[in-house]
Length: 275
Image (cartoon, rainbow, N blue to C red; front, side, top):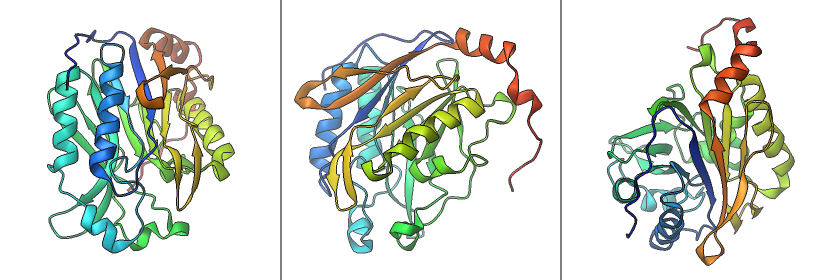
């Protein structure tokens, strides 16, 4: 762990990196090492490093394997994230297999700040077609909004992307929506266009971080993306050590609020709440 870079500028632009790890199934040590390599390489150039869904283990749907790999919220993955976020002076987002105090398993997203403060979100829409609901418990709390360097940031996981009501940006509550995913190439068309749709309808930046490589569920060629509130792709590829794929983009508060003021779509939206 070598990075020690100064970067914060409150309310200014943020640079976000979506790191498309080629995840080694069930190998936490290898995955955390690869993630460290990538994050240390972008330190000083990014404010937020986003990792894929279940980046430390791969997307696990075998109950026994998932339980063996599960950890509490103060376990090794979050401990690793807190140390690296502090050393590199950036926030780290991703998801991991979480073991709750009552023995239930969750697909738990997190965002860890340089201070060590961590916000969690348990994936609500489990992918029942693949049997995720047979292994994990659905979270029932709304997506969180995290205040970081003057930005309001929301956090969701993979299949949540298909449900616009769940991700609705009520009262301009968030400026940036982060989606961490394990989304195979066979459905890449939907992934790409759903990211764009969520950005346009919510007048927010959207960062979708997807893995690379392959697993039992398919191939992943690298479809991470950063989308602006108009639906335009703004991320560019960054070259990291070991061939790790990464998309980086600079997002602007002033551009966001100028666009919302000129075209106040959300002011005309229907009013409702989700229980």
